[in-house]
Length: 115
Length: 113
Image 1 (tube, rainbow over the protein chains, first blue to last red):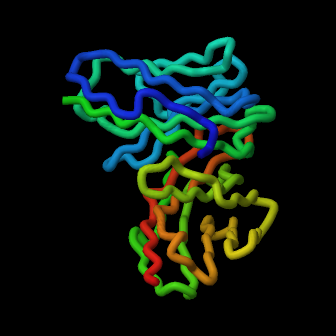
Image 2 (image 1 turned 90 degrees about the vertical axis):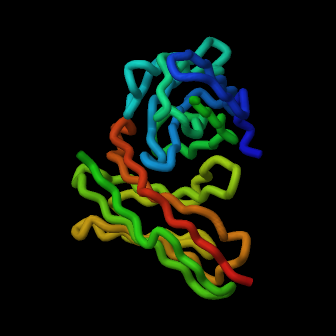
């Protein structure tokens, strides 16, 4: 158990809908990262927050957004969902300064299925 | 843009043998190379990483080598055990900008008892 929790574990929704994925980092970790893992695109970095501020932005679509709250939990919002958004979404957290060399601890993921 | 290739895509070894997974990258600005292990139904787990100022790094049965000139790096697992069976991902990024991190497509390693 990495100490990172993600909810929900599974999510099934329809095209055009909007969903919110939630992540609670390890106690004391200031950085949260979001990743998408799909069969065709592999593992892709989406976005990183450090202590409430956006730190790095990867291949995140404009239909997706994220935020990190004062209690350090983070939410990833996916809107206007398409079939191709079906994937595993992982959250990871790290302590220290939020440098990309900090060890990241991954949560168990949320499996999103868009029908 | 950056591209990371990883070979082989699947690897099957006998318990006790060594396993080697190779990655190549294209962006010469990359200087941080982590390796992740992902077990079935779980998130990736960092197992070892290397920076460009180092040619080799070891941690017990795991080692990573880096050839910056040739832009390739490799993961070596010695004395493999059944619990090493997982998917392994390499990644490459500049030290200072994680937004450019790219992951390899993964290698499914099976260790046969």
